[in-house]
Image (cartoon, rainbow, N blue to C red; front, side):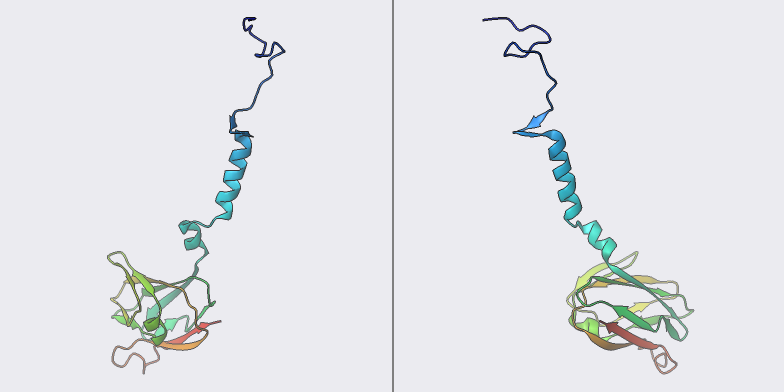
Length: 158
């Protein structure tokens, strides 16, 4: 048997650089495939980024914006911020029948529905849910006198 000489392959011919392979596919091809699959598959972080976010300010005695527009079938996030001097609430019958995640700096809860989100002055909360039913739904602050003073609006799901 002939000995192996540097610069020669096992068949006795000139040595050629060979790409690293996994199975029969070069590593470079695997990396391209893995990268393409990773970009095509949505991750949780991607889902969070693609979530429609609407910021809603609560002040005496109004919600800004007064109309919240969302797309049916698209994950939604409503960020409530109480910029007022007194407590305010966000209540809509729509969220009573929808799975909701409510979170703030001290709370993170998932529930089969939400009756009320109450915020003290300076407080903030995030509501995350998947709107499915289309239509226009009323929301309001149900603290005595607030709705009557103009603190109400429309949740529109298109």
